[in-house]
Image 1 (cartoon, one colour):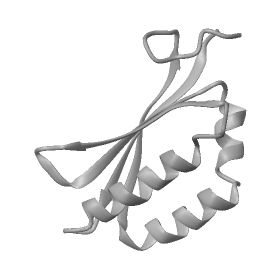
Image 2 (cartoon, rainbow, N blue to C red; image 1 turned 90 degrees about the horizontal axis):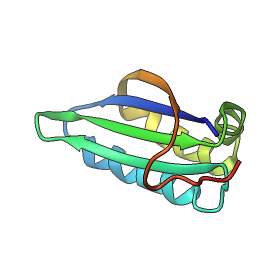
Image 3 (cartoon, rainbow, N blue to C red; image 1 turned 60 degrees about the vertical axis):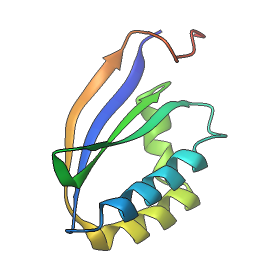
Image 4 (cartoon, helix red, strand yellow; image 1 turned 30 degrees about the vertical axis):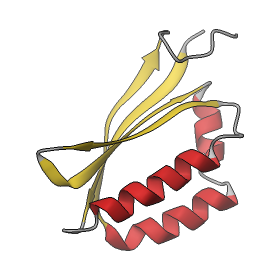
Length: 105
């Protein structure tokens, strides 16, 4: 089965990267019981001190869109908005498989 995946980039105010990482790790934790969210990884770059990257894999795009309406997600978005200076969807992908993904249809 083909999965819906996103690779996104958040630019944040100077010195606020760790705050954004904490918020996004809370988002990842809130997805623990969301079956359709298979992977939610928060990443930083050694060369971009004001940037955080997120890689997500979902069972489908509808599940991802539905997650944005969850109360926990809305609370985290409100906390993150004041420190975000830019957002970029680097890519929307169709993940075909690999280590760490459910193989269920």
